[in-house]
Image 1 (tube, one colour):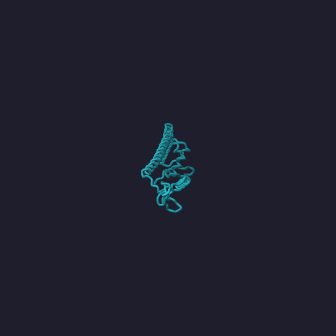
Image 2 (tube, helix red, strand yellow):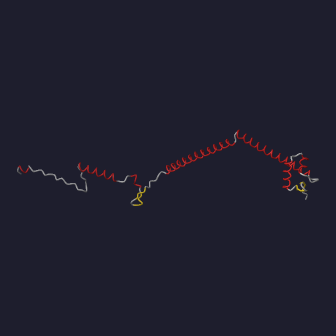
Image 3 (tube, rainbow, N blue to C red):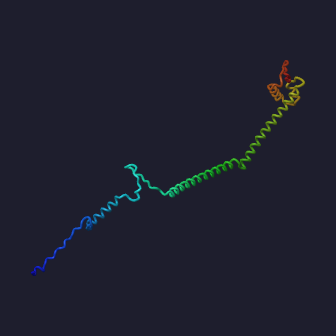
Length: 201
C-alpha cells in the first residue's frame, strides 16, 4: 500500500430529506406570522359559542331559541304581577278616599247647624201658613153652616141673613152665591125682592 492509500477522502454523510409522511417542517418566521394572521381572521369569522344554539327557520331569517332559566322567567312575571297589583291597590285606595271625601262633603253641606235651623224655620212658616189657611176655611165653613141653619125654616132675603148673623151685606151676598153654586141654596124672586132658601131633595 502506498501513502495515498491511507489518506482517503472522507465520505460526506448524506442527509435524507424528511418525508412529508413523518416529521413536518417548522415554519419560518414569516410563515409563522402569516399563519397567526390567518388563524385570527378565521377565529373572527367563526360563529361564537353563544350562538351555537341558533335554529335557522328561513334561510334569510334567524330565530334565537335560547332557553331562559324557568326560575328567572317566573320571578320576572311575579314581579310584573306584583307591580300591577300595587298600582291597582293604590288606585282603589285613592278612589275610595275620594268617594269618602265627596260623601263627607255632601253630608256637611246638607246637614249643618245653620242649614238645619233654616230648614226647620222654613217648615215652621209653611205650617203656620197652612194653619192660617185652615183656620180661615174653618171660619168660612162655620159661617156657611150658620147661613144654612137660618134658611131651614123659611125663605129669607140677603139683608135679613146679614142682620141675623151680624155679617156685612157684601160678605153675606158672596157666601150665598157660593152656596148656590155648590148646590145647597136656591134663589127665588118675588116682585123686586129676592129670597133664598134650602134645596130640598
